[in-house]
Image 1 (cartoon, rainbow, N blue to C red):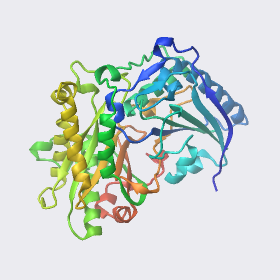
Image 2: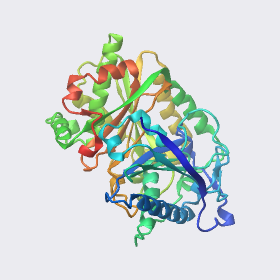
Image 3: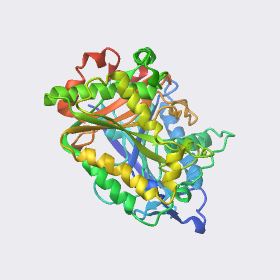
Image 4: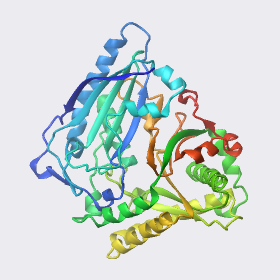
Length: 447
Protein backbone atom coordinates (compact mmCIF):
# COMPACT_ATOMS: atom_id res chain seq x y z
CA UNK A 1 0.00 0.00 0.00
CA UNK A 2 1.26 3.44 -0.91
CA UNK A 3 1.51 5.84 2.02
CA UNK A 4 2.02 9.62 1.76
CA UNK A 5 3.33 11.35 4.89
CA UNK A 6 3.86 15.11 5.27
CA UNK A 7 7.34 15.69 6.73
CA UNK A 8 7.56 19.50 6.53
CA UNK A 9 5.39 22.56 5.96
CA UNK A 10 6.31 26.20 5.48
CA UNK A 11 5.38 29.37 3.62
CA UNK A 12 7.66 30.45 0.79
CA UNK A 13 7.59 34.24 0.71
CA UNK A 14 8.50 36.46 -2.25
CA UNK A 15 12.19 37.35 -2.41
CA UNK A 16 11.22 41.04 -2.50
CA UNK A 17 8.32 42.75 -0.77
CA UNK A 18 5.31 43.68 -2.86
CA UNK A 19 5.11 47.48 -3.33
CA UNK A 20 2.38 49.21 -1.36
CA UNK A 21 0.44 50.31 -4.47
CA UNK A 22 0.08 46.63 -5.50
CA UNK A 23 -1.13 45.34 -2.14
CA UNK A 24 -4.73 44.93 -3.32
CA UNK A 25 -5.15 42.90 -6.50
CA UNK A 26 -8.56 43.32 -8.10
CA UNK A 27 -10.05 40.26 -9.76
CA UNK A 28 -11.54 40.68 -13.21
CA UNK A 29 -15.12 39.98 -14.22
CA UNK A 30 -14.23 36.69 -15.91
CA UNK A 31 -12.44 35.45 -12.77
CA UNK A 32 -15.94 35.02 -11.34
CA UNK A 33 -16.93 32.56 -14.03
CA UNK A 34 -15.20 29.42 -12.72
CA UNK A 35 -16.79 27.46 -9.83
CA UNK A 36 -13.72 25.35 -8.99
CA UNK A 37 -11.59 26.90 -6.22
CA UNK A 38 -8.25 25.51 -7.47
CA UNK A 39 -6.43 24.49 -10.65
CA UNK A 40 -4.87 21.11 -9.72
CA UNK A 41 -1.88 19.65 -11.54
CA UNK A 42 0.86 17.13 -10.78
CA UNK A 43 4.21 16.90 -12.60
CA UNK A 44 6.29 13.74 -12.14
CA UNK A 45 10.10 13.79 -12.39
CA UNK A 46 12.29 10.67 -12.17
CA UNK A 47 15.67 10.47 -10.49
CA UNK A 48 18.43 10.82 -13.07
CA UNK A 49 20.82 8.29 -11.53
CA UNK A 50 20.58 5.10 -9.48
CA UNK A 51 23.41 5.73 -7.07
CA UNK A 52 23.43 6.11 -3.31
CA UNK A 53 23.24 9.89 -3.70
CA UNK A 54 19.51 9.98 -4.37
CA UNK A 55 18.75 11.49 -0.95
CA UNK A 56 21.27 14.27 -1.61
CA UNK A 57 19.76 14.90 -5.03
CA UNK A 58 16.27 15.21 -3.54
CA UNK A 59 17.49 17.73 -0.97
CA UNK A 60 19.24 19.74 -3.68
CA UNK A 61 16.05 19.76 -5.71
CA UNK A 62 14.02 20.99 -2.75
CA UNK A 63 16.44 23.86 -2.09
CA UNK A 64 16.39 24.81 -5.77
CA UNK A 65 12.58 24.70 -5.93
CA UNK A 66 12.16 26.87 -2.83
CA UNK A 67 14.70 29.50 -3.84
CA UNK A 68 13.39 29.81 -7.39
CA UNK A 69 9.76 29.85 -6.19
CA UNK A 70 10.58 32.74 -3.86
CA UNK A 71 12.00 34.74 -6.76
CA UNK A 72 9.05 33.83 -9.02
CA UNK A 73 6.51 35.00 -6.46
CA UNK A 74 8.01 38.49 -6.57
CA UNK A 75 6.74 38.79 -10.16
CA UNK A 76 3.55 36.78 -9.57
CA UNK A 77 2.80 38.67 -6.37
CA UNK A 78 -0.97 37.83 -6.15
CA UNK A 79 0.00 34.17 -5.82
CA UNK A 80 1.82 35.02 -2.58
CA UNK A 81 -1.31 36.58 -1.07
CA UNK A 82 -4.56 35.41 0.43
CA UNK A 83 -8.08 35.52 -0.97
CA UNK A 84 -9.65 38.55 0.67
CA UNK A 85 -13.13 38.14 -0.84
CA UNK A 86 -14.76 37.49 -4.20
CA UNK A 87 -13.47 40.78 -5.59
CA UNK A 88 -9.83 40.97 -4.63
CA UNK A 89 -6.70 39.34 -3.23
CA UNK A 90 -4.72 40.76 -0.32
CA UNK A 91 -1.13 40.71 -1.60
CA UNK A 92 0.35 40.62 1.90
CA UNK A 93 3.37 38.44 1.00
CA UNK A 94 2.20 35.65 3.29
CA UNK A 95 3.69 33.37 0.68
CA UNK A 96 2.88 30.06 -0.95
CA UNK A 97 2.11 27.07 1.25
CA UNK A 98 4.89 24.57 0.55
CA UNK A 99 4.77 21.02 1.92
CA UNK A 100 7.19 18.15 1.47
CA UNK A 101 5.83 14.61 1.67
CA UNK A 102 7.48 11.20 1.78
CA UNK A 103 5.88 8.52 -0.40
CA UNK A 104 6.47 4.89 0.57
CA UNK A 105 6.54 3.77 -3.03
CA UNK A 106 8.68 3.91 -6.17
CA UNK A 107 7.69 6.52 -8.74
CA UNK A 108 7.94 4.01 -11.59
CA UNK A 109 5.88 1.52 -9.60
CA UNK A 110 3.15 4.13 -9.39
CA UNK A 111 3.46 5.12 -13.05
CA UNK A 112 3.26 1.51 -14.20
CA UNK A 113 -0.39 1.30 -13.11
CA UNK A 114 -1.42 4.74 -11.80
CA UNK A 115 -4.45 4.83 -9.53
CA UNK A 116 -6.21 8.06 -10.43
CA UNK A 117 -7.98 8.30 -7.08
CA UNK A 118 -4.67 8.06 -5.19
CA UNK A 119 -3.32 11.14 -6.98
CA UNK A 120 -5.38 13.30 -4.62
CA UNK A 121 -3.05 12.21 -1.79
CA UNK A 122 -0.24 14.05 -3.59
CA UNK A 123 -2.16 17.33 -3.48
CA UNK A 124 -1.52 20.03 -0.86
CA UNK A 125 -5.24 20.65 -0.24
CA UNK A 126 -8.70 19.28 -0.93
CA UNK A 127 -10.66 20.17 -4.05
CA UNK A 128 -14.11 20.79 -2.61
CA UNK A 129 -16.63 23.02 -4.37
CA UNK A 130 -18.31 24.24 -1.20
CA UNK A 131 -17.36 26.76 1.44
CA UNK A 132 -15.84 30.21 1.26
CA UNK A 133 -12.36 30.88 -0.15
CA UNK A 134 -11.91 33.99 1.99
CA UNK A 135 -8.72 33.87 4.04
CA UNK A 136 -7.26 31.01 1.99
CA UNK A 137 -3.76 31.25 0.52
CA UNK A 138 -3.75 31.61 -3.26
CA UNK A 139 -0.99 29.05 -3.81
CA UNK A 140 -0.54 25.55 -2.38
CA UNK A 141 2.34 23.29 -3.44
CA UNK A 142 3.35 19.83 -2.26
CA UNK A 143 6.57 18.13 -3.34
CA UNK A 144 6.20 14.36 -3.01
CA UNK A 145 9.48 12.46 -2.68
CA UNK A 146 9.43 8.79 -3.67
CA UNK A 147 11.64 6.00 -2.34
CA UNK A 148 13.54 5.85 -5.63
CA UNK A 149 14.46 9.54 -5.46
CA UNK A 150 11.87 10.68 -7.99
CA UNK A 151 9.53 13.51 -7.10
CA UNK A 152 6.04 14.72 -7.99
CA UNK A 153 5.32 18.44 -7.78
CA UNK A 154 1.61 18.93 -7.05
CA UNK A 155 0.00 22.34 -7.33
CA UNK A 156 -3.37 23.71 -6.27
CA UNK A 157 -3.45 27.36 -7.30
CA UNK A 158 -6.48 29.57 -6.94
CA UNK A 159 -8.70 29.47 -10.00
CA UNK A 160 -9.68 33.04 -9.11
CA UNK A 161 -6.29 34.12 -10.46
CA UNK A 162 -5.23 31.58 -13.08
CA UNK A 163 -6.68 29.63 -15.97
CA UNK A 164 -4.79 26.80 -17.69
CA UNK A 165 -2.76 29.15 -19.89
CA UNK A 166 -1.85 31.34 -16.91
CA UNK A 167 -0.79 28.29 -14.91
CA UNK A 168 1.62 27.35 -17.68
CA UNK A 169 3.00 30.90 -17.70
CA UNK A 170 3.64 30.68 -13.95
CA UNK A 171 5.34 27.29 -14.25
CA UNK A 172 7.43 28.47 -17.21
CA UNK A 173 8.62 31.43 -15.13
CA UNK A 174 9.37 29.27 -12.09
CA UNK A 175 11.24 26.61 -14.06
CA UNK A 176 13.09 29.29 -16.03
CA UNK A 177 14.38 30.93 -12.87
CA UNK A 178 15.36 27.51 -11.46
CA UNK A 179 17.38 26.82 -14.63
CA UNK A 180 18.78 30.36 -14.69
CA UNK A 181 17.31 30.82 -18.16
CA UNK A 182 18.00 34.10 -19.92
CA UNK A 183 14.37 34.19 -21.11
CA UNK A 184 12.50 36.31 -18.58
CA UNK A 185 8.76 35.77 -18.16
CA UNK A 186 6.98 38.98 -17.25
CA UNK A 187 3.34 38.30 -16.31
CA UNK A 188 0.83 40.82 -17.58
CA UNK A 189 -2.07 41.13 -15.12
CA UNK A 190 -4.32 42.58 -17.78
CA UNK A 191 -7.59 40.89 -16.82
CA UNK A 192 -8.95 43.59 -14.52
CA UNK A 193 -8.14 46.25 -17.13
CA UNK A 194 -10.03 44.43 -19.87
CA UNK A 195 -12.95 43.25 -17.76
CA UNK A 196 -13.08 45.46 -14.63
CA UNK A 197 -15.78 44.96 -12.03
CA UNK A 198 -16.77 45.96 -8.53
CA UNK A 199 -19.86 43.77 -8.61
CA UNK A 200 -20.64 40.07 -8.30
CA UNK A 201 -23.38 39.77 -10.91
CA UNK A 202 -21.40 37.37 -13.11
CA UNK A 203 -20.48 35.19 -10.14
CA UNK A 204 -24.14 35.02 -9.13
CA UNK A 205 -25.24 34.26 -12.70
CA UNK A 206 -22.52 31.68 -13.22
CA UNK A 207 -23.38 29.91 -9.96
CA UNK A 208 -26.97 29.55 -11.19
CA UNK A 209 -25.68 28.15 -14.48
CA UNK A 210 -23.18 25.74 -12.92
CA UNK A 211 -25.75 24.72 -10.32
CA UNK A 212 -28.03 23.51 -13.10
CA UNK A 213 -25.20 21.39 -14.55
CA UNK A 214 -24.13 19.67 -11.33
CA UNK A 215 -26.17 16.64 -10.36
CA UNK A 216 -26.33 14.02 -7.67
CA UNK A 217 -24.69 10.71 -8.42
CA UNK A 218 -21.49 8.77 -7.86
CA UNK A 219 -18.83 10.24 -10.10
CA UNK A 220 -15.72 8.44 -11.28
CA UNK A 221 -12.76 9.38 -13.50
CA UNK A 222 -10.96 7.29 -16.12
CA UNK A 223 -8.20 8.07 -18.65
CA UNK A 224 -8.60 7.34 -22.33
CA UNK A 225 -5.38 7.83 -24.29
CA UNK A 226 -5.47 8.47 -28.05
CA UNK A 227 -2.11 8.00 -29.75
CA UNK A 228 -1.11 9.68 -33.01
CA UNK A 229 -2.46 6.88 -35.21
CA UNK A 230 -5.83 6.94 -33.42
CA UNK A 231 -6.12 10.69 -33.89
CA UNK A 232 -5.21 10.31 -37.57
CA UNK A 233 -7.99 7.73 -37.89
CA UNK A 234 -10.48 10.08 -36.26
CA UNK A 235 -9.53 12.83 -38.67
CA UNK A 236 -10.04 10.57 -41.67
CA UNK A 237 -13.52 9.72 -40.37
CA UNK A 238 -14.54 13.27 -41.30
CA UNK A 239 -12.97 12.98 -44.77
CA UNK A 240 -15.16 14.36 -47.52
CA UNK A 241 -17.26 16.42 -45.13
CA UNK A 242 -16.79 19.99 -46.30
CA UNK A 243 -17.78 21.56 -42.98
CA UNK A 244 -15.06 19.80 -40.99
CA UNK A 245 -12.08 19.60 -43.29
CA UNK A 246 -8.82 19.18 -41.35
CA UNK A 247 -10.25 18.98 -37.80
CA UNK A 248 -7.85 19.77 -34.97
CA UNK A 249 -6.83 17.09 -32.48
CA UNK A 250 -9.09 18.66 -29.87
CA UNK A 251 -12.08 18.85 -32.23
CA UNK A 252 -11.62 15.25 -33.32
CA UNK A 253 -11.20 13.78 -29.83
CA UNK A 254 -13.83 15.86 -28.05
CA UNK A 255 -16.38 15.18 -30.80
CA UNK A 256 -15.68 11.44 -30.63
CA UNK A 257 -15.92 11.30 -26.83
CA UNK A 258 -19.18 13.25 -27.06
CA UNK A 259 -20.53 10.62 -29.46
CA UNK A 260 -19.46 7.77 -27.14
CA UNK A 261 -20.87 9.47 -24.04
CA UNK A 262 -24.20 9.99 -25.82
CA UNK A 263 -24.26 6.30 -26.71
CA UNK A 264 -23.65 5.36 -23.06
CA UNK A 265 -26.48 7.67 -21.98
CA UNK A 266 -28.82 6.12 -24.55
CA UNK A 267 -28.05 2.62 -23.26
CA UNK A 268 -28.59 3.69 -19.67
CA UNK A 269 -31.91 5.48 -20.21
CA UNK A 270 -33.21 3.40 -23.09
CA UNK A 271 -33.69 6.37 -25.39
CA UNK A 272 -31.67 9.04 -27.19
CA UNK A 273 -31.46 12.24 -25.14
CA UNK A 274 -30.66 15.81 -26.15
CA UNK A 275 -27.06 16.66 -25.43
CA UNK A 276 -24.95 19.77 -24.86
CA UNK A 277 -21.16 19.92 -25.03
CA UNK A 278 -19.49 23.06 -23.66
CA UNK A 279 -15.87 23.99 -24.34
CA UNK A 280 -13.80 26.54 -22.43
CA UNK A 281 -12.20 28.82 -25.04
CA UNK A 282 -8.96 30.76 -24.56
CA UNK A 283 -9.74 34.37 -25.59
CA UNK A 284 -6.13 35.60 -25.87
CA UNK A 285 -6.12 35.22 -29.67
CA UNK A 286 -9.63 36.70 -29.98
CA UNK A 287 -8.49 40.28 -29.35
CA UNK A 288 -7.20 42.81 -31.90
CA UNK A 289 -4.27 42.73 -31.55
CA UNK A 290 -3.79 39.39 -29.81
CA UNK A 291 -3.08 39.41 -26.10
CA UNK A 292 0.32 38.21 -24.97
CA UNK A 293 0.64 34.55 -23.96
CA UNK A 294 1.83 35.95 -20.64
CA UNK A 295 -1.54 37.61 -19.96
CA UNK A 296 -2.70 36.42 -16.55
CA UNK A 297 -6.25 35.75 -15.47
CA UNK A 298 -9.25 33.66 -16.46
CA UNK A 299 -9.31 35.03 -19.98
CA UNK A 300 -11.76 32.39 -21.17
CA UNK A 301 -15.39 31.97 -22.16
CA UNK A 302 -17.76 29.07 -22.77
CA UNK A 303 -18.64 27.78 -26.23
CA UNK A 304 -21.50 25.34 -26.63
CA UNK A 305 -22.60 22.72 -29.16
CA UNK A 306 -26.00 21.02 -29.10
CA UNK A 307 -27.42 17.79 -30.45
CA UNK A 308 -31.17 17.33 -30.26
CA UNK A 309 -32.61 13.95 -29.32
CA UNK A 310 -34.45 13.63 -32.64
CA UNK A 311 -31.41 14.53 -34.71
CA UNK A 312 -30.57 10.92 -35.60
CA UNK A 313 -28.67 11.81 -38.78
CA UNK A 314 -26.04 13.80 -36.84
CA UNK A 315 -23.19 11.28 -36.86
CA UNK A 316 -19.60 11.68 -35.67
CA UNK A 317 -18.63 14.18 -38.35
CA UNK A 318 -21.78 16.19 -37.56
CA UNK A 319 -20.83 16.37 -33.89
CA UNK A 320 -17.32 17.56 -34.80
CA UNK A 321 -18.96 20.16 -37.02
CA UNK A 322 -21.11 21.32 -34.09
CA UNK A 323 -18.00 21.61 -31.89
CA UNK A 324 -16.23 23.69 -34.53
CA UNK A 325 -19.23 25.96 -35.05
CA UNK A 326 -19.69 26.50 -31.32
CA UNK A 327 -16.05 27.43 -30.74
CA UNK A 328 -15.92 29.60 -33.89
CA UNK A 329 -18.76 31.75 -32.53
CA UNK A 330 -16.41 32.88 -29.74
CA UNK A 331 -14.53 35.18 -32.11
CA UNK A 332 -13.15 38.71 -32.23
CA UNK A 333 -16.62 40.22 -32.69
CA UNK A 334 -18.03 38.26 -29.77
CA UNK A 335 -15.22 39.43 -27.48
CA UNK A 336 -15.86 43.03 -28.59
CA UNK A 337 -19.51 42.60 -27.64
CA UNK A 338 -18.48 41.22 -24.23
CA UNK A 339 -16.50 44.41 -23.59
CA UNK A 340 -19.15 46.77 -24.98
CA UNK A 341 -22.14 48.46 -23.39
CA UNK A 342 -24.21 45.31 -23.90
CA UNK A 343 -21.55 43.03 -22.43
CA UNK A 344 -23.65 42.02 -19.44
CA UNK A 345 -26.57 41.12 -21.70
CA UNK A 346 -24.33 39.14 -24.08
CA UNK A 347 -22.67 37.14 -21.32
CA UNK A 348 -25.92 36.73 -19.41
CA UNK A 349 -27.71 35.31 -22.46
CA UNK A 350 -24.88 32.86 -23.10
CA UNK A 351 -25.06 31.55 -19.53
CA UNK A 352 -28.86 31.50 -19.48
CA UNK A 353 -28.95 29.34 -22.61
CA UNK A 354 -26.59 26.83 -21.00
CA UNK A 355 -28.37 26.98 -17.64
CA UNK A 356 -31.79 26.45 -19.21
CA UNK A 357 -30.53 23.32 -20.93
CA UNK A 358 -28.98 22.09 -17.70
CA UNK A 359 -32.27 22.55 -15.86
CA UNK A 360 -33.99 20.15 -18.25
CA UNK A 361 -34.39 16.59 -17.02
CA UNK A 362 -34.40 15.32 -20.60
CA UNK A 363 -30.86 16.21 -21.60
CA UNK A 364 -27.21 15.55 -20.79
CA UNK A 365 -24.43 18.11 -20.44
CA UNK A 366 -20.71 17.41 -20.93
CA UNK A 367 -18.11 20.05 -20.13
CA UNK A 368 -14.71 20.04 -21.85
CA UNK A 369 -11.47 21.94 -21.45
CA UNK A 370 -8.15 21.51 -23.23
CA UNK A 371 -4.66 21.83 -21.77
CA UNK A 372 -3.12 20.85 -25.10
CA UNK A 373 -0.36 22.81 -26.84
CA UNK A 374 0.70 24.72 -23.71
CA UNK A 375 4.07 22.97 -23.42
CA UNK A 376 3.84 21.43 -19.94
CA UNK A 377 6.16 18.59 -20.94
CA UNK A 378 8.88 21.10 -21.85
CA UNK A 379 9.14 22.41 -18.28
CA UNK A 380 12.55 21.81 -16.72
CA UNK A 381 13.44 22.94 -13.20
CA UNK A 382 17.06 21.94 -13.62
CA UNK A 383 16.66 18.18 -13.21
CA UNK A 384 15.00 17.12 -16.45
CA UNK A 385 11.55 17.26 -17.97
CA UNK A 386 8.48 15.54 -16.47
CA UNK A 387 7.67 11.98 -17.51
CA UNK A 388 3.99 12.61 -16.85
CA UNK A 389 1.68 15.58 -16.30
CA UNK A 390 -1.60 14.60 -14.67
CA UNK A 391 -4.88 15.90 -13.41
CA UNK A 392 -6.72 14.22 -10.51
CA UNK A 393 -9.26 11.42 -10.42
CA UNK A 394 -12.52 12.61 -8.86
CA UNK A 395 -14.92 10.76 -6.60
CA UNK A 396 -18.00 12.03 -4.81
CA UNK A 397 -21.76 12.24 -4.64
CA UNK A 398 -22.08 15.46 -6.66
CA UNK A 399 -20.74 15.57 -10.19
CA UNK A 400 -20.63 17.32 -13.49
CA UNK A 401 -19.79 15.30 -16.60
CA UNK A 402 -16.41 16.70 -17.54
CA UNK A 403 -13.54 16.02 -19.96
CA UNK A 404 -10.00 17.38 -19.61
CA UNK A 405 -7.73 16.94 -22.62
CA UNK A 406 -3.96 16.88 -21.97
CA UNK A 407 -1.03 16.26 -24.32
CA UNK A 408 0.77 12.96 -24.08
CA UNK A 409 4.50 13.14 -23.50
CA UNK A 410 5.27 12.86 -27.24
CA UNK A 411 3.16 15.99 -27.74
CA UNK A 412 0.98 14.59 -30.52
CA UNK A 413 -1.36 12.24 -28.69
CA UNK A 414 -4.07 13.19 -26.19
CA UNK A 415 -4.98 11.95 -22.74
CA UNK A 416 -8.68 12.44 -22.04
CA UNK A 417 -9.57 12.53 -18.35
CA UNK A 418 -13.28 11.74 -18.36
CA UNK A 419 -15.50 12.13 -15.30
CA UNK A 420 -19.01 10.66 -15.49
CA UNK A 421 -21.72 9.22 -13.31
CA UNK A 422 -20.59 5.67 -12.46
CA UNK A 423 -23.41 3.81 -14.32
CA UNK A 424 -22.56 5.63 -17.55
CA UNK A 425 -18.83 5.19 -17.04
CA UNK A 426 -19.36 1.44 -16.67
CA UNK A 427 -20.96 1.50 -20.13
CA UNK A 428 -18.35 3.83 -21.63
CA UNK A 429 -15.37 1.68 -20.64
CA UNK A 430 -16.91 -1.24 -22.56
CA UNK A 431 -17.73 0.72 -25.72
CA UNK A 432 -16.04 -1.25 -28.56
CA UNK A 433 -15.85 1.81 -30.83
CA UNK A 434 -14.02 3.77 -28.13
CA UNK A 435 -11.70 0.92 -27.14
CA UNK A 436 -10.78 0.35 -30.78
CA UNK A 437 -9.11 3.77 -30.80
CA UNK A 438 -8.23 4.61 -27.18
CA UNK A 439 -6.26 2.83 -24.48
CA UNK A 440 -7.96 2.70 -21.08
CA UNK A 441 -5.79 3.86 -18.16
CA UNK A 442 -2.45 2.82 -19.72
CA UNK A 443 0.91 3.46 -18.13
CA UNK A 444 1.82 7.07 -19.01
CA UNK A 445 5.49 6.20 -19.49
CA UNK A 446 4.56 4.08 -22.53
CA UNK A 447 3.17 6.99 -24.56
